[in-house]
Image (tube, rainbow, N blue to C red; front, side, top):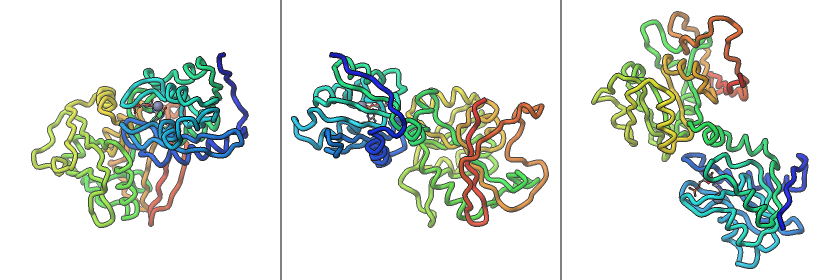
Length: 347
Ligand code: AOF
Ligand code: ZN
């Protein structure tokens, strides 16, 4: 018999278990090519028989991790609550759809469809095996939890966070190009945490030549954090042999081009899903102009600089109807500075 599919209202019977599965998902890393996924195996009375989550690329998927805590007969008749549609492909590990069928679960409840061409199809296979499938449970929360991974998987390019620091009047440097320091230590520390939370960090050759940045993720005492982003330079000019970037713990990626679409495709192929763009103004503007920015992190210092060195250059906004409206998602005081997190509004 074929299983049945249904969509439930938002306060349905699986919300509680799905919230737990979402919390478990956060135990995995947000870095690298794989999503954060959590799984709860429920008994008929709603109690939890086992829990699992995915630790990162190459390790067991959440469903398989949860099943591994039970003896072979125990999963029979259970409901698997998973944050992502169970995969249906053999990648670094085997298909979760088949693992769930073999285990004998009666029902699979999930939040978000797997957007991958190769990996999707788990729901269809489960239904074909006579398992009930419920999709879309807490879909909005799950979308928000793994938004960068979903955006990357759906668009075939890394999720892009554009960061800049500027004066209250939007200047990132003085007329003579000096730019250190505008923001205080709390804001700078926050930037280092952001670097560690991204797979790669990108700047233009202009910034390399002007600032000689290290692009490492460092702690309070200047020590290297465990996760270091891949340093990437766009532009045709060469990075000097004695540049600080050449001493980065990860090998520098020199793209030799200003074609951002090509750069993003290449980074995606290398497994980069979260890209942190740190400027300068030319590169930042190009990302905005091409509609390639997903999240903005703007560090505003209570200072005035005035003059020509604005944080962003020409965006192709010749008339006010073309302005790029953003939605502010968070405003955080950091010492004397303000962090404004925003995202692009759909155009
Ligand atoms: C699931 N459960 O816990 C995860 C899924 O190379 P692999 O074998 O690790 O497969 C990675 C893909 O599998 C990934 O791109 C995504 O589509 C899916 N991730 N699926 O059923 C999980 N982490
Ligand atoms: Zn899987």
